[in-house]
Length: 553
Ligand code: GLC
Image (tube, rainbow, N blue to C red; front, side, top):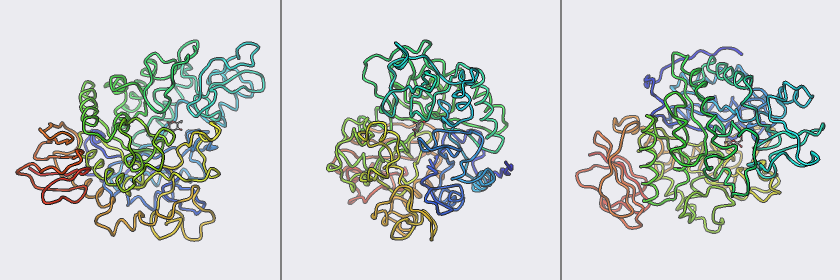
């Protein structure tokens, strides 16, 4: 691989940039297709990096771009040190990293340590009967006459978590059968991943999102889970669970932090850890472990003032105990897009799959969009770092009517098509024009986008929204510009103001106030303030329901 030159022109030179960063999640398959094969790629990223700069984000996290048979959209990695040919080349990756840096954007990659692909050289050797190679995975004899799986563990994607190989042994896969779990008790696995981190850090990458960070260590003896309800991706997991959030994972991350800290410039981590509550989560964020973690309780919170205030307070208080910044996130490539969640009655929160949310007949997309505008302004006003999933800035919704034959999520196949899965939040981005592929692929492309885009994406292309001052894109750009300009925003603290029931109002110093009205009736704006930005029209100096406002004092 050719080494890219790292050019730092960002005004943010602090080593603590990650404490207040707005990070854009770039789902490479669906961002932009440079070569016309219907799949997003690095050429597409390079052609559209200025979109990220103009949006005003600080960093980009790119979902896995490594060689992969795509049993799980790239989360089945067959070579951690190379680029998937469908996405481009190592040279293009280096050039992209340098170009992002030149625009003042940091670059985070996605590392997948819980499992490799079944086509990884290690797993192939293991299947070939090489004993040392088998020790890198979790192979066991079956129960009974060997024809029963070694224990009762179920795959997150549905079905059993064990697959039998030709010589009769079984291997563990908490996800798809194409994603065999690695054995983190094996020092070779530990050394290999530290080396992979160095490989990319040496190529200018600024950090990693850690996939399934809470899953790497399994309880010795692999005991049955038993018949407690398994919430899987939809919530936390009980302490003492045989494979989620085992205490042993922390030793791994202390090693990773040492690797990161061996570089003069900051290299940072963000953990994907679905654990039971903030206390368990901040254990990943102790000073010698990871820098940040996604705040999934926030993503899962109902659109309700009391619930939001509770999760905000709990987050800020708990993260502060380890001196870690809070993070805030509304959507990602695994959950129903928040326009489509917030436009449904979902008073109890915690529901983010199409199978657990109320049916599509209950969706009011206009209302969801109004709420998503207010939700973005709340999120960007909170202390800490925030995540934007590609398309959030356009107000994209979940595409719920994809025909079964185009669906690709392994969940769909492993549940006999009962669980609809996550394809609906992964539909390719509309850039311009009035019909598919909406500028996602170049003119004369040889293939249609890998998932079909709905006709009404015509109204939410980047080009259409750029010329509409009332668009979601205009709101995101204005909010992120202010977030950079106002000294009160970003890292720091907040102070709640007295407010009527159903209204959230807080101050940040110096001189900033945010008010979000969830009461259903208009409320007066605080006296002595001037409006900087509002998520919707203000009626005669009053703040309507489902509307947020930023004020200067
Ligand atoms: C994480 C990813 C998800 C993937 C799974 C298995 O939850 O976000 O997309 O399917 O891990 O790697």
